[in-house]
Length: 393
Image 1 (cartoon, rainbow, N blue to C red):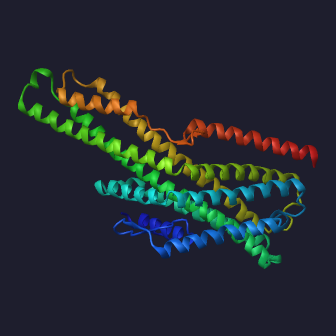
Image 2 (cartoon, rainbow, N blue to C red; image 1 turned 180 degrees about the vertical axis):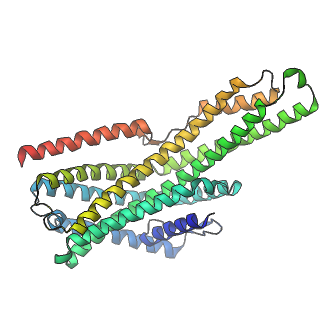
Image 3 (cartoon, rainbow, N blue to C red; image 1 turned 120 degrees about the vertical axis):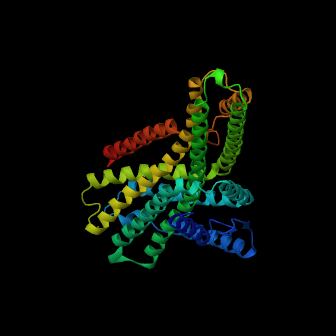
């Protein structure tokens, strides 16, 4: 494993342990997982502390008035709803971690066994893993810096707890989405290797000579060898797809929580940008450095959102690429060996019968079409909120 990727995995693991999001231990050298009393107690206390403190702070303090000057009642209501939803989603996601703890452990072991079959997969995940860690780290750092700079001249213990509360919820959600990203990225890397192997098999099968030159032992041996490779590709693909679908079911609740968090936060951010434009004095207490930190946070926040979405899209496209590669069989010379033809037919039938689809409780699919619908919904709801502000304030 490349050193840079290894560091990303280690930092993500330690971050998960510190926040209590990862409620079991993993031996990073062997990949073995285990549950210990120390880890269980620490994670339970961390979750109790991480959730009760933000909830208590939101109940007693209005965070919007601390960050925005001249904030009206709509600002208070919108950002209070967003804050409570973020805390509620974090709580639900953590509950899901406890409920599926044993399944997470088995899932990690399954990915470890798949990785050991072909360690070359990390070469295809390296760029994505490093980009994800960098973008998420910058976004989280800029959010903390922006909040700290805005209230620096009137910083109190209560405000510090409020900032820490926001960062806590952000950290929990970031750990969850990073682990999900790593798992999907690993699966996509395996699909790339399978497609590469299938492409090589197809090229070799296409290069076989004319029919009259095939009736010999060399031709039969070559076809049997290629059929074995196709069977191996089909078996690995079947195991990989079953693992992806199992992971999708385990992560359903957390994906739903992440979706709600991203959705409401995006609507809130759109309304915030409109408010800054409409009410010139709403950020009068902000310094240029805090405005720069806020702008940088928004850029990296949505860059992180995009890289998470495209990680899913690229996985689905890698699966679809296998279909397109098998369509090249129409270019084959007529009359291949029956066993090789049967191996290709079996793989093609398996892919057609079991298409890879990622669902979330049957509410929606994780694909480009659903992302487009969500984008339209975000635009409509943001416009409605802005119209309400213009009519009443």
